[in-house]
Length: 181
Image (tube, rainbow, N blue to C red):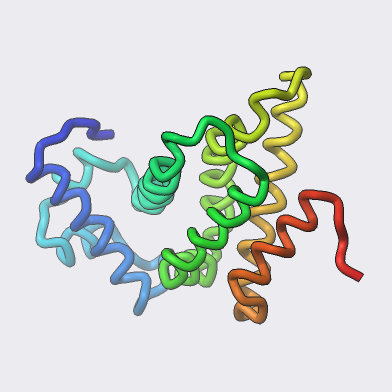
């Protein structure tokens, strides 16, 4: 995948992302072709393959780009608290609500789970730095990945009956072992 900083290349990559997201608003993801994405972005198939191997890679790139943006907000913070993570999760939902809904409505739960599992260790490392038994970190990451992925999917499928703030508070309580009555 392209990792340079050529402005034209970066712009082309963003056009491909925008093209797929735009097509997902009106068409079933499984039926969208690479040719359609390229036509919508007004780019060649060769340009597509310079950046991505398949259309799933566009969704994966979108997720990675979002969590890198989110993580950059905490670069100066040495260690995060659990409530910081739940607030970040709520902010992520708020900022990316429309696209996340399309992704979930299209049944791309596996991509969500994969990408959440890749982002959790990055965020968790800022929370669990002081855990003495480092071998337990993979279990903590697995727990958080499953919890966050399923909460995200459930929240969208439940048509967001909880506000983002209520969801953040519920998640904080669940992670802290305080279960609502």
